[in-house]
Length: 274
Image (tube, rainbow, N blue to C red; front, side):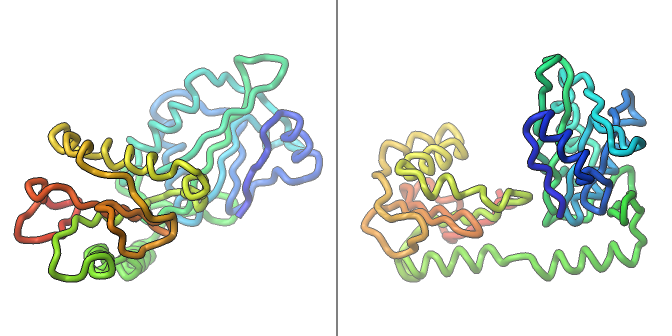
């Protein structure tokens, strides 16, 4: 997969001169992003198509010249517009990352790198049609391929309830109450948890994330929870009612007061349930 690591205009120019800015299955070059609904729809198709295998859209590069020429575009609000298209014009929304590269000559113009990670929720739809990426252009997916991709997605889906029960059994056994939260990031970067796992204050950060995800009433329980005592990557039982681990999926297990249990008859519930 082509990944544009450039952070300056000089680095972009060097990539172009060295023949590394050519449209491929994973890279799309755009001289500019037009205005209006039609341009937003085309951008949504691009993002949906790249979400199948992952890819990059580079705006501000003229692909019709040899080597591709740098064409700085107005960047005020451009990154925000692209993110809105990814959230609102695609079903379901695609998580993207945008990087703005500013030239030294004009701070109001520049280039936008749109990183589209491979989506575990692909294929994605725009105006009732599914899209994928061909060799260098987008393609509309036929029904048979859509069915195959959706079947594969269902087959790869994790059983989060089974994971939660296994964690509860490892920590406290089968007979004690324990609220277990299992998070399976969607469209997250592979290195999303690296900085957290290497931080000396990871416990405080996790607590803040857990508290911010609860409603106002549950936040009053924060004063009752002691600090976690386990290390990142450790899923051993602990005397503290809060334990955390990092890995392919973020897992946080907590024991709030009995009254905060979503269902007094079941220690487990799915986010889609009330």
